[in-house]
Amino acid sequence: MNILIIGGGGREHVITKYIARNPKVSKIYALPGNGGISNLAECASISAEDIGGIVSFAKSHAIDFAVVAPDDPLALGAVDRLEEIGIKCFGPTQKAAQIESSKVFAKSLMTKYHIPTAKFEVFTEIDKALSYAALNDYPMVIKADGLAKGKGVTVAENFQQAREAIMSCMRDKSFGASGERIIIEECLKGPEVTVLAFTDGKTVVPMMSSMDHKRAYDGNKGPNTGGMGVIAPNPFYTPEIADFCMKRIFLPTIEAMNKEGRTFKGCLYFGLMLTNDGPKVIEYNCRFGDPEAEAVLPLMETDLLDVMMAVRDERLAEIPVKFRDASSCCVVCASSGYPAKYLTGYTIDFGDAEAVEGVEIFHAGTKIADGKIVTSGGRVLAVNAVADDLATARDKAYEAVGKITFEGMRYRSDIGASAL
Image 1 (tube, rainbow, N blue to C red):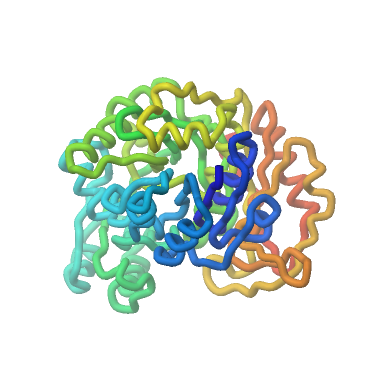
Image 2: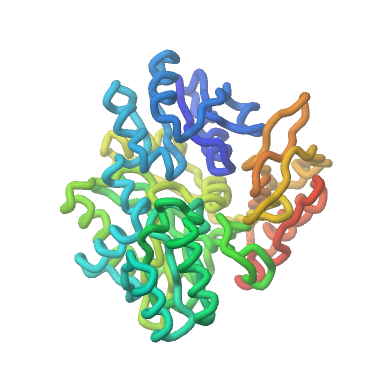
């Protein structure tokens, strides 16, 4: 089989690595890929958002199966276009991807179908948003409606911070059209949990739970990022909570999407908060989280491509999806300045990091220049370790991180600390 992977981050690297293990695979292509993916696949300089270019490439390279991994091409209809020319895909259609591409749609869906979530209001006018923010309790959460690379969310501790977030979105267009409409919602409190789930629109198979660390700095301080690290499983996600979430959140969401004529097939990301009133949905994503995928997929025992093909063909119920009884700790190595401005092009010295037992290094923002791996993004590497318990996995991940160097490298030193 000829496989096409669309995307070029750490999530795509782990997907490529585990798909490559399937004996049915003869060739893998990646658009655009990165420095690490290039060791497993033939990469081509076609943007993941260039849907026309992707379709032309798929036609000319006799692609049998495509994995559309990032949010942008899903929201732009990459799956629809590829399926139209007869190429089977893993990933939701454009209509189904709206569960992430519009937070207003997602919140309205939850309200309509009684799926527990935070109270919220929608605003399209700056003055009304500011008036609402001035009269309500803090902290409060301000969200851009559309896609914003994981950075369109602000937890405001006071009116000044709320005002800055509102003006950034609606006046300054920091997130382009994504911020023309915003949501202001109550700030939920409690442990945060991410659950990725395979679904073919009929069957829902949750993967191992995880705990993301979104803030830039230690102690959950600083701006939101795409994610600075993650552990799996999440110790706060008990079997009782998992049962509640399946009955009250996961299955109702899939059923709601079916009723809306937006059948979801792919990986659905459930961002949850375990409040005193029970689990509530913070957000949906229409794809694997990043870096959650780098921590969860290494624990998966069932072949990834087999599961993806079963999802596309609506026969997920036939595949027993199993995970190891082990723990993962994934630490992101980022460029100085991320998530704001940062410099790239620095050579990465991996030392003997990959020799640490149980460690895998997934490339996010890297490329090859003059035969060397250099930095090319804000989040550069995702260093993941698997061990029998979280404490050991954490020690091994940080042991490996300590062997890696590049100019401006920074990382959080407390990934998983709160779980221990």
